[in-house]
Image (cartoon, rainbow, N blue to C red; front, side, top):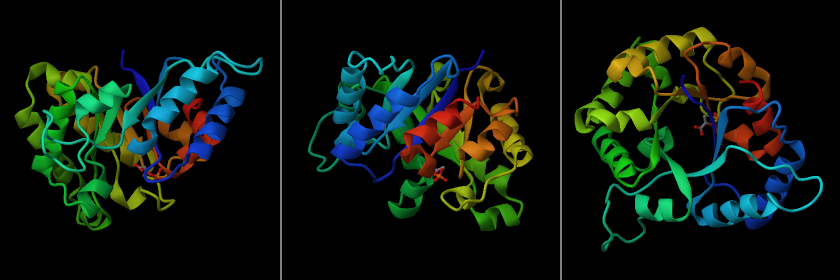
Length: 259
Ligand code: PEP
């Protein structure tokens, strides 16, 4: 059976105060009877990974209103393609993310590709760096509006995955998550219909070794509490990568509870 996973991508948002109130909200709103068998992965900016991790851990044992946050993990939003320590100013390696308590890392988000010039080759190298550091890569693929309108969705997704398929060896892909994120749906309020998303998820699965039988394929693009249930009712959608709605603990939990 595949793992269900819901990822909070805070992007470049957050502060020490936000983390305190967010985790406090998580404790009061988390219902372990409703959220079962779902990994909740929080990806704050790198600067806040440690405070979030400490806050999640310290609140687990405090206060009568606080319940244990089962299945909460932390992840990075990006990592360096350099694996070994060295003279790479500004870079953060997979080893460092692991050292901070991360189990996951987002790779190849469309904002990294668009604003920071990350190409298919670089993101494939990052994928391998994540695996070498013992992290689970959450590998993002997806077409932009013009590509969808030209009917190129599947070929774009195939091209984006191909470099990873070429570089990775056998078992590397087994410990990974693929996120289908149509760029036209990210932060726009537009969402792929469950059928549109499902079609691409099935296609991705077919490209993966062993038909991706054990690899979660999650959807991202304006997922909200209002549309999550419908998306998750599709058998090929194993969870979500959530941007805007993940900044509110209640909304994020309600998305996770829809699985
Ligand atoms: C994202 O950041 O990957 C994302 C899907 O954002 P949003 O949910 O805001 O569309």
